[in-house]
Length: 157
Image (tube, rainbow, N blue to C red):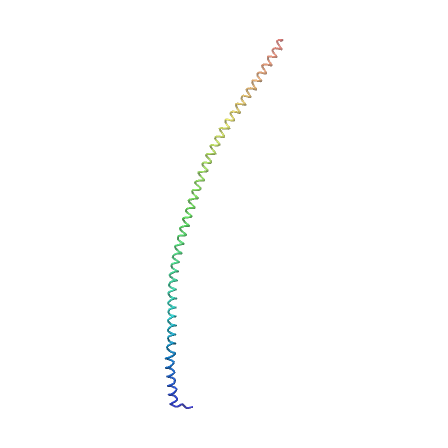
């Protein structure tokens, strides 16, 4: 197989024409498409970076908010605990005061009951004394009457 110089030149010339035609017709649209795609990819990377920064910013903002909320929650919890202790002390004080009042009232009632019992006891003692005195007087009277009867019987008449 032998190639002639004319065939080589024709083929080279055909290749150059093909290359020129491809470059004019297809190369610019392909480069434009590639450049456009590269631009979109770069824009996407920029958006991704921007989104990452925004997410980091939001994350730190939320972290700060969360810490602030936790601090407020601890403060409110401590306030609630302090208020609960205060209420417990107040309830205990009130209970002590009520117990003192009940005790004083009970002592007063007991004193009144003792006084009533003494009065009742004095009445009963007085009644018993009167009954005993009445019985004694009746016995004395009966003895006197018996003596008088005996004396009448003895004296005759």
